[in-house]
Image 1 (cartoon, rainbow, N blue to C red):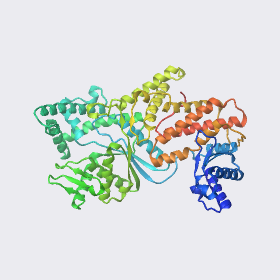
Image 2 (image 1 turned 135 degrees about the vertical axis):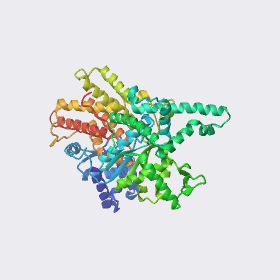
Image 3 (image 1 turned 120 degrees about the vertical axis):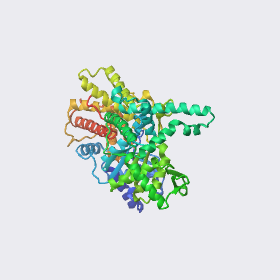
Image 4 (image 1 turned 180 degrees about the horizontal axis):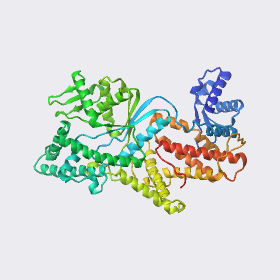
Length: 590
């Protein structure tokens, strides 16, 4: 690598001329910023005191030495304490040849670290919505990126299939469903069950309002409402194994799973293993009860069990209610323990959950540590910002959400309208066009939600999300299709043996960015940040389009033509691989 050669040469210069021992790994070499001429920049400031001269003089001396010692360096420029180095056309030609002929460049690395990534994890009382989409696309992409970098990844979710929220939709259907099914009314299963969840909340509000009018405080009214008590009774019946309640639960969850599967298929998302809260909550309850016997937890006068984390700077957290029913924390304890039983060699477990649950995971990880689980240190919370609407926060029980299915349909229709307006699809049959619209629409949505750093809260702008121009997924997809069109016309000539004495800045900049690909994917895997890849591939697309507009490709001759077709081929390969790591497909034609 040229950076290592430069760093070693700098260390040798300082030793030879100034008798200073410098570790070459500490020499700072960065990609030259776009507004300056050069390929790589050496930060000179750390050596000024050693060389006993001004930063500009130190940079000049280092530049002269490096140009004499390294044949690949053909020029340099000095800006204060920064030395911008220019590399030869021959260097970049060799880099292109080496990259194109490297079969591992866009291939998965091989490794043995086992990693589990949890994402999606819906409740079975409502359909997936916009908030789920950011979670799903983020967790899926993090899984793909880490697989690419050599991890053995288990993609999983915990399906929250029991609890008070589930009983709400169950009770509403029991009271008002009149034997209907999703099939009998022609409705998708998860949406059908979600309708009854909203119905329950509407009826509860009326009961609470009536009790408030009789003089009760609102919080007390919610507790005293008939519906609240009925749902709590249903939850107790479920946990006690009541046959009728269990059968209703199985039937309605079955409807939801069919709906989820349909949505996941359209997203292009799959899981390796599914966990269900109904299977793990008892394990969690057993672990908590053992912890109580060991003096790790406290039991209050009403019989409820709590973990006390005041010494850790937190508070007390409920683990088991007074009536013996469990909470999310209990099932999370059981699920974590079950996962490490299923996969004893796990080196990392990642929970993809919004930042509203930051405190929950602080408590979970500390509780697992208190319980003595050695693997507690390997648990990570991939926290991400919520998705807001222009009208405010989404509220599922009030039906104020952007439905995932509806949104996907909207973006696909937007892709259809935009593509048909351009009138370039006349030679595609109806099935081919439909496939293209699906690729563009779902790609636009994924790119929109993944291009923002996960840690940042984001505003969902419906118009911007379906735009097919600008800094969008379809712009990147179009660039790939453009590359493929060039290669269909120009062929893929063998780049081996190409020799150029000069290349343009556009070619140089594009090649330099293409060579950063594996560094970007490595850093994205380590930081669990797909937005780094989205930003990178967007830059590649912009650089290629500048190159395409300003440089002759098909009209070039000899080695210039070979080099430019090689650049086009590598660009296409890099875009396709980068987008695949975001879970996005690219079309051969647009």
